[in-house]
Amino acid sequence: MHFSLLAVHDKSRTGIIETSRGKIHTPAFMPVGTQGTVKAMSSEELKEMGAEIILSNTYHLYLRPGHEVIRQMGGLHSFIHWDRPILTDSGGFQVFSLSSLRKIREEGVEFRSHIDGSLHLLGPEKAMEIQALLGSDIAMAFDECTPYPAEYDYAVSSLELTTRWAARCKEYMRQHAASFGLRPGEQALFGIVQGGMYRDLRKRSLEELAGIGFDGYAAGGLSVGEPKEEMYGIIEYLAPLMPPDRPRYLMGVGDLRDVLVAVEHGFDMFDCVMPTRNARNGTLFTSRGRISIKRTEYKSDPAPLDPDCDCAACRNYSRAYLRHLFLSKEILSMRLNTLHNLHFYLCFFRKMREAIESGSFRHFKSHWEGVFEQGD
Image (cartoon, rainbow, N blue to C red; front, side, top):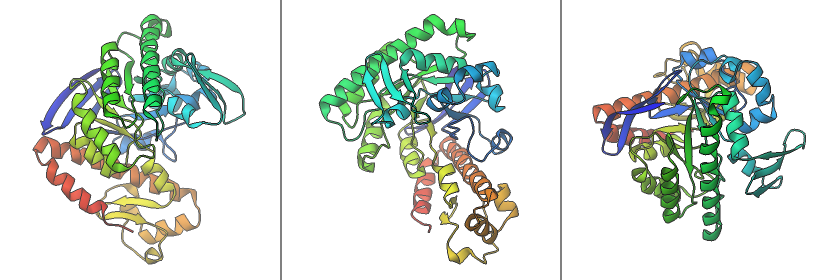
């Protein structure tokens, strides 16, 4: 993997991540394909709307169908028919979400499957093995996602554990990457900065990870219930400390208002289920703000969902029809709504890159902040 900057405007920046399976233009949005599929979308549709990279989840694919099955099917790209880059998370966030079903120890996290209750141990080495066998282009180091709120002493111990685990992840891949058939540089490894809402701990975590050395750096443990002001404070503090020659990934943050703040301070990569989950719930993003398609006012509305959008849903169907599909619980509703929301997100990121490169990001941010205040 190679990362190069194209343009910098104040602190916001555009760049290109080059992988063996293609280029990723940053700032980039990664549609979330938790279980090997971006819900309701085919790989062909994702390509047509311009997705350059998707995210898949180690925890879910490990439990079902199993990483060995996927390996036998030629790896994750072959299994899901996607020949562009894939980022896999380490599974840490999902495991730590199972608060009543897991135990943390130095070796890793012991947990019970949410599917059948079977007992598993997921640690740094296992997380790396799974991601290597999946064959993702970018793998994430195994970390402890510090909860919110967290006492200072707990955040310290969590940070220290994350650092030790990160070192083990890198060492495991140094020793074993070739045995998994990975060529040098074929699978990038990103470290994850923790430290809760404590700035000194965030700085310490980043310094320790940079000392180990990773291909990119992510900010984890944000958008986990903290007030926006606290999240923005960490974003503003952390971004300029991160190595400028490596991609900066803000994990799990996808509210476009938050994205604007993060990009303003220099973050490059984002993922979130917001566009797909909201689509299934009937909340749609438009150039005029959010629309709740179930509202009565759209019952006889012949207008397209967003007159400024050229996705298939907006080109071919009325708001009245989309409302009818949603209220009738038709499968097509989920597909068209998801197609539109993802198309909107990917176009938003493309326009944001153009604004940075033309030196007009401040105007872009101000305009969209006004738009996001509108809507149903």
